Length: 160
Image (tube, rainbow, N blue to C red; front, top):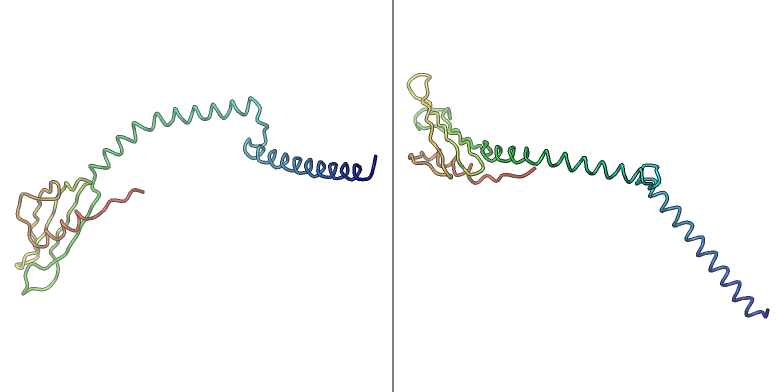
């Protein structure tokens, strides 16, 4: 063998050795990842079968939960989701914001407004209730009731 051929052979051998080292290193990394993924097991038929069974059980569980979720979501839409509150003094010549209005609305702005007016004569109050449909009432609203209704209708509902 002449010297240039011998050098080419040594270079080829060195490149091959480096290639095998890189392949060995990559194989060890892949084995480590597989060990993590399969929980210490090799990807044998048993581990794959176990994963498939778990997936089937989860799908069955999801099929049972979905109808129940629909019921919960429908109930949530009809539940009180927006609340507004304002205190006020209906009489300018007496003190204290002892009167109040409360708006309780669902997702579609249906609900009720309660107003309590504290009377000047003795410690008593009068309670009024007005139905709210689509963010409006059939009855006349006081300024305070209109303000609390407007503020409550404008509230946004955030998904969690």
